[in-house]
Amino acid sequence: MKSMQILAKTTSALALGLALAGCSSMSERDRNTAIGAGVGGVAGSVLTGGSTAGTIGGAAVGGVIGNQTGRKDR
Image (cartoon, rainbow, N blue to C red; front, side, top):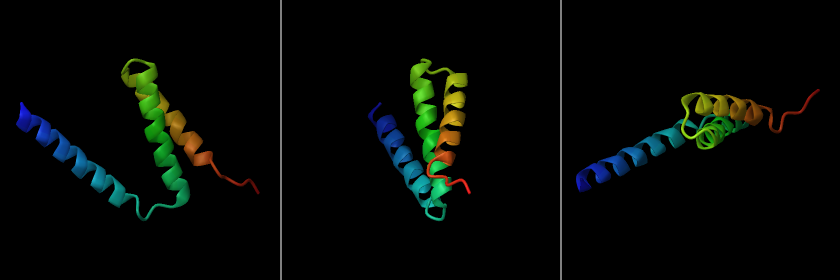
């Protein structure tokens, strides 16, 4: 059981590192979209008790909000 926890932590750390490295060349708007989608997905999951539809819906709404954050209309 202990080895499974170590494997899970190692895998999570590796995934986090790869995700952060992938964000290095993103524009500010792209980063805001990704952050909004992540936060929205977590919030949707929590609010709907882990429902897949709630998670996807939250990610979609959060992504749109993140994309529009800081946007200047001309």
